[in-house]
Length: 220
Image (tube, rainbow, N blue to C red; front, side, top):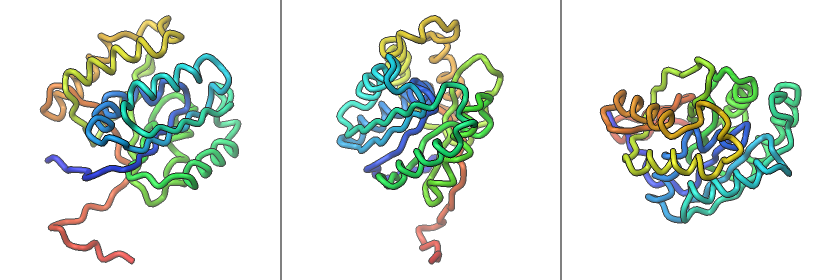
């Protein structure tokens, strides 16, 4: 059953590392920003500040968000050590929350095997308490693929553009044996099968309230 998000004016996208956002939802970003010119994209990445990866991330978001109003903050949390910097991560999320009011917040899912991703997924709903929070999946060597419950269908063109742009924008990651177009397109095809489309990206929905029949939810 398709559910429509309606008009989106602002979204927040959060990643532990440079490339997490593009790997997890690059085709969704391309689809959203193409459909919603001028969409405000507020991005936060925990680590990579001052390195070549920060420059890669800025170039990537510009490529994956054509025509969007993009703001990016890259922090200096040490890669692989985010749990030891819990307070700083929490403060960074609070600062992001204070400067935006997104319709949807995207970040990692709670069952991700990487400790940095997992901490971020656990803290996101504590700051964005009244927002729709959706966890993307990050393809990697760990066997931690989620059982997603939300799918965003994407065209074959968008799926191929994502795979191509990942290689173009993140040359520092080319040495990984899983970082190739075949792998990214394979996952997109699998998620497409699961929602009866050719290609899709999948997410784990944190929590939502479904209003039936167009009536008010009656909440105060």
